[in-house]
Image 1: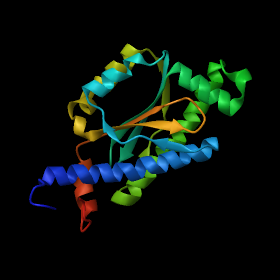
Image 2: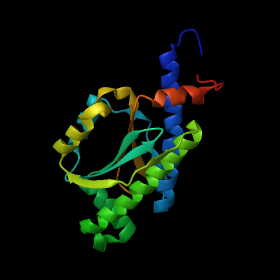
Image 3: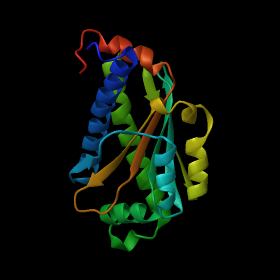
Length: 200
């Protein structure tokens, strides 16, 4: 810790490093699922401007929500535009199934389970906590409904605890969004996790 950094800044840096590890693991799992190289852009915070930037997505949106239970609590959303859901499912299932939304739903639910489990496993191992992801739920919603969900309740009140990425998939023109929001108690676990780590 340098003299120019406050405790909150050090904690913020540590949280980004931890989330980087978890998102990297989820991207690896996504890649195994597709048999493609999957990367993600830099981790961002889900503030009001980034929420509003999602208002251009092609609807209806597929939003898969999962809750974290146990020591560490939170909520995640995996969000696909209609176009992205169809593109991804056409790649996995074949062009003949491009518009069969019931099959899309099953595929997206399976994918959400894989990505969420990968992410949560990293947090549980790194922070040495008992936590798990509850069964995900998929909703077909409009952009306005999505904005209302992302702006609602305690998740929106403290933006510093809400993280997001866009995946980028080799050879497939889709960019699904993966967001995570946590209770404030995540910072007590991150403080313990930091221990003797050097966070610059």
